[in-house]
Length: 549
Image 1 (tube, rainbow, N blue to C red):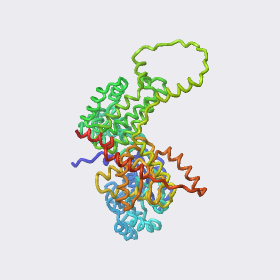
Image 2: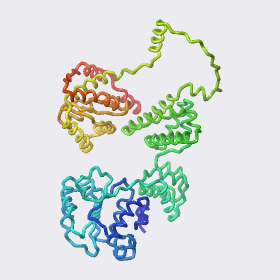
Image 3: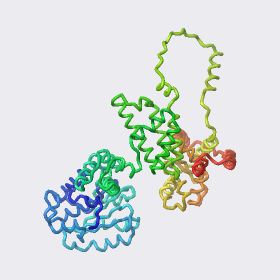
Image 4: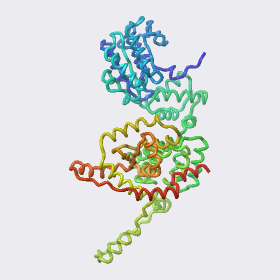
């Protein structure tokens, strides 16, 4: 007998079998029960939440000969044919592979034919957002006024790509991510039916890994069942999904607190040898820190937070988030993970480590008579403060200066048509990339936002100073990519979002008051940057070279 995947074997057959979508199923059952069917439905939601399954159940129940309270009887010929995917009046189409005008025209040509033996002819179009604009236009009229014997059920994970003219002609249902508790119950049920032994920790981890998608959870269970031959524990789940255990995180943070770099690098080497995903590890570290912080807030007692301090935990979370953005775009992720471990260790102040290892010393405070400072003393203190203030890295000062000039020049001539053109260009850029180098440059722009533009300039902002400096390092590469694709000569301007909000308001006021904004010359600053680039490669390239040694 041919093996059947678990997610197909345990796909729900009636509305009562569906997990976690009670609002949708209740509404559809009532529509059948009270004969309030409409001609088109649109199912919207994340993958694996039951859109296609419910579409099939809905189609079967509509045509069922003896439905009870809006639920199919599962005994009539229609139900049996539908369960075996043999009902010729239920037509399923995957728009990902059938997205052209010809396929939709074929639907238009066949909708006039009456159903073979069912009440309704039902078209289920999955991933409908993949249809071309021409296909959507061809579908529009049919969708608006179909014959009385035809019902359309459309499903999509990306509703923003479906034209509003299509959405407005459908009754829309939004599918929610399925709660972990319901996913865990379903996993237990399947394991009991399949006689699979599985630990509670493994079930919980599968639920967390599924991100609200039941199909993904059952698919992972199927994979684990094959790997372990029906005896699954938490270690097996962690091997398959590339994550690490809580005990490993505790060991990691003990080494961070002790500033034990050798121990940290040994842990990192272990992750690498086991094929762990560093991005997933960083995401789990954030969850680990967040859970520890919540525990500390609720119970006012958490060993890790007590050692690290609440403020340091918050700094760590933001630092890890920045590094995740870097690692997503790198082939050699271990380099940045090791740098992250050094950074996390340095965030814990030296005096915190001393406090942990030595007994607390209480110093009795004595009142000291107030002494009025003379002018000379104040001046001396100012000089001392200047000396004690941290040294600012001047590597990107020239870039900051260049961006101020460019922002001035772009905002002096900014117009709505330009920003519209740039937004459309970025949205379509991914499909127009020719090589890996262009892909890497494009990836840098994914976490950025286009906020302004003129005929010869584009303003791009980010929340991260780390990413901003990376954009600076790749300024000329980004400009080359934009100009090659647009056949133009556009100058790129990068800013932090906070700076943009403060600066742009002043320019808006000047534009409203019709004040003149002088165009500034950037030649001198740009030349100094170009000369520096020719002399020395940026730090980002140096790090990559270290990883290739």
